[in-house]
Length: 398
Image (cartoon, rainbow, N blue to C red):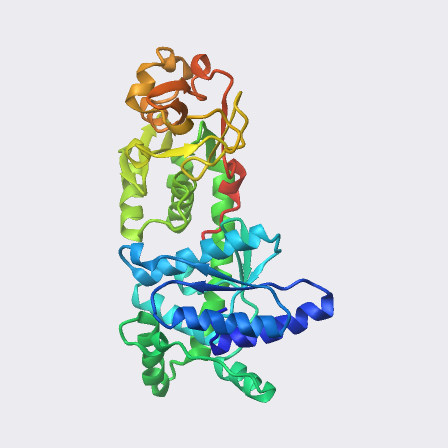
């Protein structure tokens, strides 16, 4: 929580809910390091939590290291930090303080970006991110109602000055909503639109899952899609399935931009290849093969016992525990040098490009094992995490 009105109200309401159910409640504040007052605000939240007998943690992020869209980078970092914190403490879920006003602002911002159904569905009341369940219990309540609750309870809060800073899109959205109210475009209407789009999204996701179950299969971490089935599907469904496959192979949180996705789908249906989202798209007989792009993982190393490229889990003679694994062993891409040390790679039947991006065990510059090449596996096995079943359950909603 930040100490703002929404988060203080969430704390007060959540504590009452948890007490009635004898459920443990923990409090966390993310300090993005972007404002000089943030540390003092985190301390104020710590005092509030202590006064209520609740454990509190400050999760810090170095915003100075971010590139590009700072607000988006901060948001992504916030979810990662909260997920890690929740998992360390064995928490079942993380509650966020978003309100219906936040939902309306989100829809307006996405409308301005030309978003489709997924974007206009707004924020979900519940979602999984980084292996953690996030819930938004206040999504049906107005910001003013929460502040009235705080006043009635004699509780104070601190307003974040960035909420009114016109440099930020959300502050501009709040001002725009006030200006649009005379036209009948208000928070309630935008929230209702989000609810209708969410229902449409549910139907579209169901159609995509059905197509994925029919037309997709996984081979050595690559996704193969039956091109005839893809061509016969409604355009929206085909694009959704292609985006789903790309996100699974690249372990990407967000789908590609629509223009690039549509162009790649056109190329694939015409039997042409390409690259998108850190993946290679190649015709493979009657199928489209989606593989990790070797350039996307070149030089990427991870300790044995951890996920490599965010999705590969390797097991072998060295224990998977990175703290006790054989010293000096790392996971890295097989690459050109590694493939040259695997003279029998063609017997795998896998494309050269797929093997170049596959995980291998290295000791410095020496190849120890190539799990996807049987005669160089040396007792090592590799499996993607999440498994292929995730292709049929990914909803691509946020």
